[in-house]
Image (tube, rainbow over all chains, first blue to last red; front, side, top):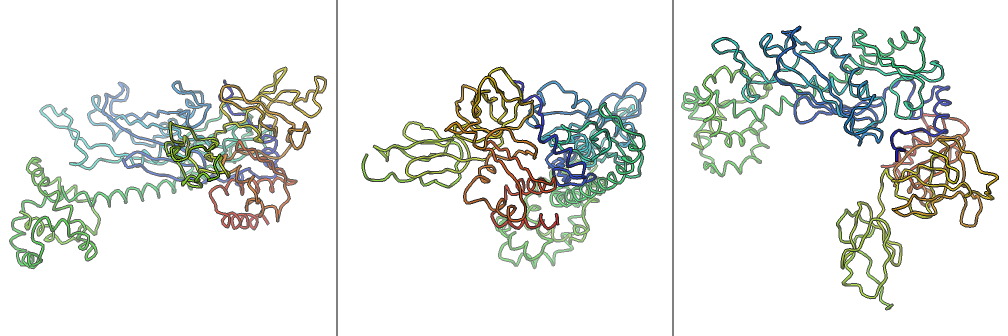
Length: 395
Length: 239
C-alpha cells in the first residue's frame, strides 16, 4: 500500500487554508509572521540538543574526532552535517536511503554554517597537516510538524554551542605526539562560534502575493513555493535557498530578508539564553562532582592545614558522631544547618579514591588550578578546614 | 444462568496496561461475558492487550478505551474519510486505519449504476463502517441502516483537522462536552466528528472556524472547567 507515502490534504483543507490566508488568518491562529513556540532542551551530555518548534521536533547531536585534514586546507578542522529522517517522524520518510528533502535539509544547514564560517575551523587544528578535529553534527528528525529546516538549523546551532571537545596537547620528541586529555583531567573546550546563522523559511501562496513564515505541515502541503533565508543577528545573509515552486518578485525577497533579520535576532537571543542557562547549570553540577579532583590538589598543603586547624577539629570530634559510619548518616540534618556543607558527604566518600588519583597524576598541581577555576563563587568561599576535618576524622 | 451477578472487575474505569489481568475466570462459572477491543482470554484469565481505560457496560460487556492516532475500524463507527482513489466499483477511502477502506459506488441513497457520484481525489466524506475485520479492507456506506442518506455523504467547504481517537470520542459523548457547549453559546458552526480521529468544522467566517478548531485541539488535556475557561479566553481575544 503506498497511500502512506505522501500525505495529501483534502480539498476542504486546501481551499480553507488559502481562503483564510487571504484575510491574513492561519489555521493555527498565528499571524503570518509569527514563529511557532520554540523550545530548546539539552541532553545530559554536552553537544546534544532537542528543538521543538510547535509540533516539529528535531534532535541535534555533535561529536568530534581527530582526523587528517584535507590536503588543500592543512590547518583547518572540518564540519559535517548528517541527517536522519526516521519513518516514525512521518510515514512519508523511508528508512535507509535519504530522500530529496533529507538531502536538501542537510545541504541548507551545512551551507548556512560552513559558507558563513560561523564555526572557527582553524582553532580545530592540532598539528597542521596531520591532526585536526572533525566535528560531526547528526540531525535526527523526531516529528515532522512542518518547517524542518528551521528547526534542524536551530538544533544544529544549539548542539554546536554546547559541544565541548577534549583538550589535547602536542608533545613528544618530535613535537608531533598528540595527547588527548580525559575530560575529567582537563576541562573540554567549547568551539569558537563567531555568529549564529539562523534559517528562516517563508512559504508563498497564491501567485506569491501571500507569504507566511514558519509554515506548518499542512501549509507546506498547500503552498506554492518556499524560500529559506539563512541570516544572522547582524543582518548578514549567509545563504538563500529557493528550490523551484512559485516565482517571487525581488522586492518580495528583500522584504522577506528584512523580516528574517528581525526573526533571526529573536531566535539568536533565545538560543543564547538557553545555552547560557544550560552551561551555568552544568557548571553548578560540576561543583558538586569536583571535590574529588579539588581535594587532590589540596593534598600537599593539607598536613599543615590540619595541624593548624586542630582547634576546630576538636570541637568537631566532641560531637557524638566521630565514627565514619555515623558521619555518612548524618548529612541530611547537616544540609539543613549549613548549605555549604552539603558537599561533605560526597567528600568523605570519594576521599580514598581522590588520594590515590592524586598520586597517579604527577603534574597535579597546575591541573588543580584549572579544575577549580569554573567553580562558582559559593564554592570559593567554602571554608577549607571543613573539608579537612572530615578527612581527618575518617583516617 | 444463575441469579447471582458476576462481580465486576476491580479495574473498571481504571487504567490498564497490556498484560494486566482484568478478570479471573476461575471464580466466575456459568457466566457469559463479552469482550471488546483491547482484551483477550488467556486460559483462565482475561488480560488487557492495549493500554487505556477499562470500561464495563452493564451487565457484562468489557472493553479497553484508549486514545491513539491510528484508528482500528469497527462496525457502526461513523468516520471521516478522504477519497484517495476511484475504482469502477469502489472509492478507496483513507480512514486512518491500517488499510484503505472501500466505499462501494452504490452505497448511497438511491444509488444506481446510472447516478454514481463523482468524487475527486481529496474529497472529504462522512460515512459509516459496515464491515470491519482484520484481514479484509473495511467497507463503508453513506446510508444508515434503513437505506436513508441521513447525514452521510460529502462534506463541502469547512476545515478538517486530525485529533486523537480519544478526543473525538469525548466530543461525541453525551451530555455535550464542555468545550462544544461553551463554543456553541457564542458562535454558530457546523461540526462533524469521526470516531477515527478527524473533525470537520464549518462556519460562515474563517476566523470562527479557526477559533473552534483550535479550541477543540487544545481541549484534549483539559478538564471540564479548564475547557470552559480556555474557550472564554479564546473568544475574548477574538472580539
